[in-house]
Image (cartoon, rainbow, N blue to C red; front, side, top):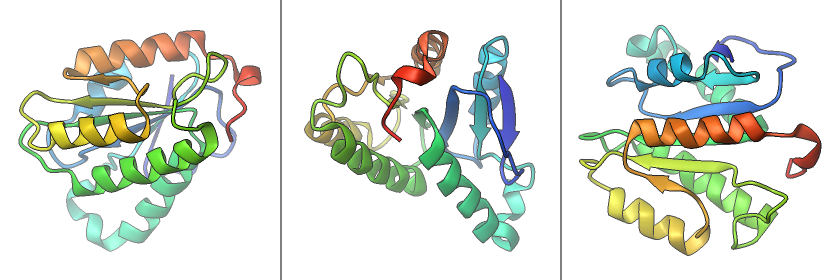
Length: 170
């Protein structure tokens, strides 16, 4: 997959479009995703900017990049790291789930429209139960796993079987 890191402009992208949502200041879990999917076709949006430690100076630029990439993506893989609260990731998840609930209905899609959100929450993530319950209430068919390898496997299966022509929820 072609990887595009925030806030790099991306122009035209090869489908499928994958956004990695989650903590950008702790352990670099995005690197494991990138290396595990490197052999696949598509574009991976990575919000972990090389300068994330000094983000305040370019927060608006990066946030606008993330907002646009999230809305354009075919799949958003959310990862909630152990020991982090991830408030922005929680906000992004809520916004995207509400958007998809409006587009797809409470069942989270049909056989023709695969789920657009996969969620992974580490076993030690402090709000895992809350995220799981909220997900079940709004989008009960959304895949929810407890390890990064499981999230990567789900994502790999989606990208491998993705067909842009069949995907109409944009």
